[in-house]
Amino acid sequence: MLDTLRRYSDRLLGRGHAAITVPVMDGALKPNRVLDDAERVATRAGLDDLASDGQALFVSAGPVLLRLDGERLVELRRFDADISALAAAPGGLLAVALEGRSVRLLSHAGGAWAERARLDRIGDVPLVGVNALQFEGVDALLLSDGSMRHGPADWCRDLMEKGRSGRVARWRFGGGIDGGRAELLAEGLRHAFGVLPLGGTVLYSESWRHRVARSPASGNGALLADLPGYPSRMAPAAGGGFWLSCFVCRTQLVEFVLREDAYRSRMLASVDPRYWIAPALRSGVSYLEPLQGAGVKQMGVLKPWAPPRSYGLVLRVDAAGRTLRSLHSQVDGQYHGITAVAEFGGALYVASKGSGHLLRVPLDVHPGAPA
Image (cartoon, rainbow, N blue to C red; front, top):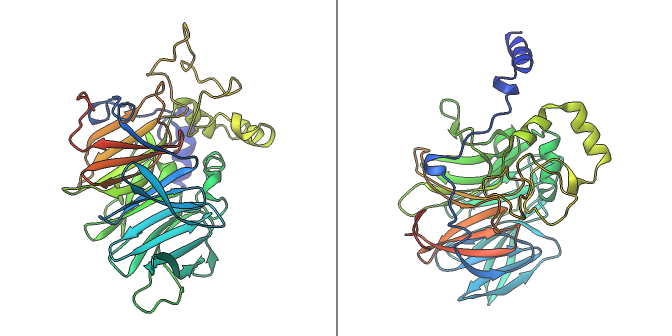
């Protein structure tokens, strides 16, 4: 009863749950051009996820599994469906998720990557939106299933429908793999998108709640909360902590639309999804895109501080949940829709799905310093 009254009061006064404010990017989050100044390593349509086993960097692009070889991407295997998540472990193990509905464990033998086991469900419920994978040791795999209603490609619909059916699970495959069951770690999540074992707990990104949480939960379970972007995949960082990609950023306009249920329902039913008032991995390609307040060109120039329909953002976070630095491609930049990061060979590799580019940032580059 008290919760119902509080929610009604919040909506009436525009505060708490009903507020449409978005955190200001300042301090460690102060905008810079590190991503726009980064080295462009490769270009590939459908570029999405990255994984490293310490010896090689693996890349997914549509249905193709690739490995970075010097300055070029070499095809390792082509699947019959798009790869929606990727993970690598020492000892010649790879895991791939195909269209969010099936996780395949691959081992390297005889010069080829052969399927060793398969997971298609958590308990009795089929996988639908697997979007991130991480090995936990040599006998377990962590996975996030973003939604039980929508596949990974329909993340925007899940956001606009205010989905809360995401799950995080652990698949213990051990030595005797039967492709069997997975242990559920968290459910009822507002779009799970990213997992990482850290300090005896499992971290997971809950995109539509703008937070990174822990399982098992301690306190309120949140390591990072009220982020200015929608968090997604994570990768371990040298020296402890992790890197976090934010694949799109929040705006007051989208926060407002999410609270106007009647308007939002009509928009979903009658407007082409490309032109919804919603975030995107890429923007500025059509004059039909919705305008966003100050996001209008003046004298032919789009201001870098305009509200972002698309944006590029990576955070460096320590083990205690403090954001140490951030890497940006601002509104007027070109490397938006950052969906994955990975440290490899003394550099940070960044996947910009919005532009289809693989970027490399030296780890000693800091905001304000030349790349």
